[in-house]
Length: 412
Image (cartoon, rainbow, N blue to C red; front, side, top):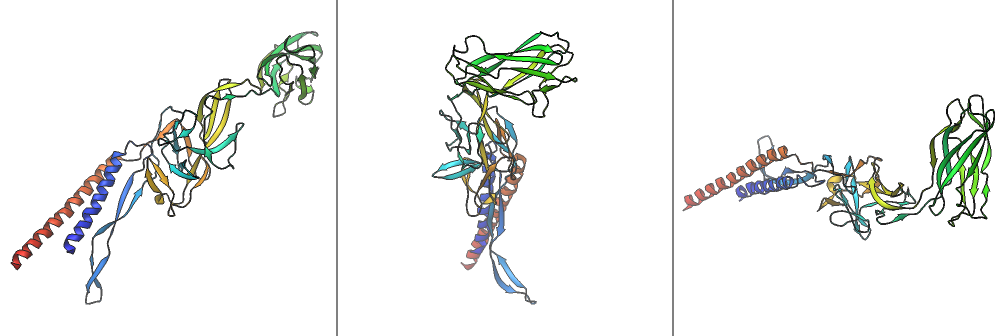
């Protein structure tokens, strides 16, 4: 009988609403969980007649679940201090490898690191991103599983350029020498404390000499472009050399490394000299060079643009990859797989990957997790409404049962 069928559709729909609310409440502490809402629609109608004016008289057939929509608004982001944890502040999903070239998508950034340095989700799916070669990320390359260089050693880099910020006193007497030192590195990562000795030779004129410590070169070692003249104008600015010194070289290094060849940047990027000669004490305020010794991996961090930066024991930092984010045209069309993971469907459209902070994608907060966006007050209110609706439909069923029983009794 339709009298029973109609309230039964209500009971079924209300049960769906109660189950959805219960699921929301049970996941209120689930990382990256998105609250769901049940929406109803009326069933088809049967015309049982018409009015005198021709208007149809239509009787409804109950209610049905129209959809269960996910609320993809931002959840609160809490810091965890764990480097492998990530949260998206804004739009987008993390990309996970499902194997065989397929990808999954998630807001749950509770990632961990395997023994060999792979970044994976809680159920073992690899976190996907853009690869880096020698510290340079290639965002045009296909996505690949991100890996941290655990246990790896960063090879040394020989010094190719150096600079020194210093003042040579204009009041110094002719013949005054001002020694300064800077540590440079050869191709094997061995450090060499290079001495630059400035000697005043006349008004506004100084000579310089660059040398390695005794024993750093073999007997056959040679030095090139290690001496020269510095000329300053009346304002104390360097005028000669008019450009950076290049081709400074030491050969025959005792440790067997390649020739130590580098340039001396006498001018910064703005074209101003790093050496001055004014009436102040001669002093070196800063030195800089681009070489370093080898170093072992120590830790990593994720920047807001998703760049994964590894830190080594030599103090150097190097990009080892960049976390990718993805969007779809219709997030409601995603298929939910559990574990906070989604798969694309024809309804959602294909996922488009990109770099965080671009093309409408949110930024990444390393060492943090996005919490569930379930509002407990709202859920309790919805729970009461769904409960009352279920009770009302239950009452309709018992009422129709009583009417049916009375009808049967009349027939008897």
